[in-house]
Amino acid sequence: MSEKNDENLLNENGQKQSKPKWWKPFWILTAISMVGSGVFSYFFLQTDFIRIIIYEIIFSLVLCGAYYIRVRPSIKVNKVVYILFGITPIGFGLSILYALFCGITNFAKFIMSFEPFGPWLHLGIIIGLFTIGGFIGSWIGKKREYRIPLSPY
Image (cartoon, rainbow, N blue to C red):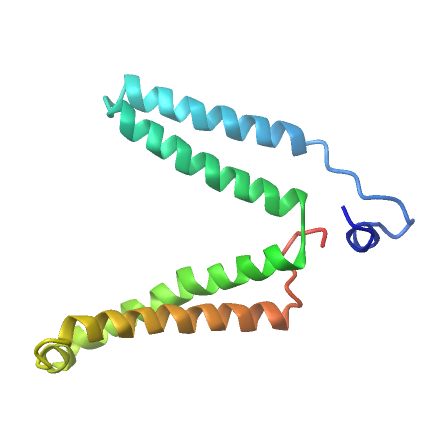
């Protein structure tokens, strides 16, 4: 780690922060539960083996990302987390509101009346809403100085 990160990870006594006692068992139990859920799904729920492998790979990537965010805290990673926070729940929420607006009014029919460009215009509006969500997430992160809750950095 760089010296800048080491300075920010020091506690009030000037010593490096130690991980809590539950830290290592937590990650071990998480990995075991991931494998256990795959085995359970295969034998008891009769799920396809390929589908289980795909789910396990996705879960492993998410688990590695969560571990990386906690073990190697940095401003760059925190910025990405806040932008993704903005895109996923905030942008998705704005898209749901847009869908409700289109369902309540005749706005969807109006947009589709632009014959060759109607579906592309809908797609552009939805992408724009997700982009606005990303900017809102970045703005929230800037207000919080890109600090993730319960993060040592």
